[in-house]
Length: 447
Image (cartoon, rainbow, N blue to C red):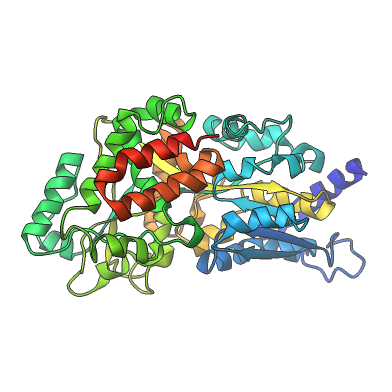
């Protein structure tokens, strides 16, 4: 059966690639005899955390695959994915495929997942299509979470970059402000903006059950730039505690942004009440209500229509997060690691499609926040100049070994998607005097 299924998967992929390449084969067909569309009528359910515009972009991605195979790929997104995936798996209602934005959470379900090799996936070829860091990361995450299991249970679908500050254009330059190259420059810039009677920061953390991750991103970018990759990796592996001076320093630097009077639009109450996708919107007012924001490259998908993109006069610009104790071009990022809960031919074909160079083409063309982890991905699909810039910097960082995955996403889910998030909320609510207690509580929660 597995030999037959693997041959069917190969045939399906050949049909799909021919269809996407504009060949003469009629990969669409009417599926009447099941020959051209070997999985006619079968449904593959995918559950993930991305919603709205990203969900629509994913539908664009799978449309050619559905046409070629006859598979109906039904994607369901949830802003409360972190909670719902556990309920579904434990309740015997697991999706066929789940896309985890937190690989540490992915690791908790390895025992319920199907080995990619058993599906007929060429796992060696899949690893070769990723950088060594990405290829080795799932096994490291599984070991870190004490969920080690022989086999391959995760595939990368998309990445994003996080090390960006956003500013309004042209108002930023017209006010006499310039991009900060160092942390000291950043602090001086916010003081200059305050002195001018303006508000430096747009800052929103609200994200449903995931509220807190915006602040953890801040800390991660700082740790990567103060301690370098060695300290960062030690922190992820809990070889140094959360209340280590390196980590405390990062949180204190975040406090330099959040707590000074007038530094954040609406104050700390607004930080927790403002949805992360809305935080940049005040930047587009006339005049801008705030002049700085930190957020990942995918935030452009949440901008109001007509303010950013290849066909408009951009009202925002991304500048690299400043260096602190290093001169290297560090890059923090994240992405979706998917796992499989159903062993079937249709699911196997879908997995092979998702990890192929063609798997993210529609997503990339529809959403400037999408970056493919596949080294053979055709970068011509990056239609936005900022997207191209991200792709180039990401490829360079992966090649140089200066890319690191979001720390909270790698840590055991009870910490990375639990106490680290809630601890950052407590830090915002209770102020800098509460920091030692917050970091100690997070450290004590490590399983």
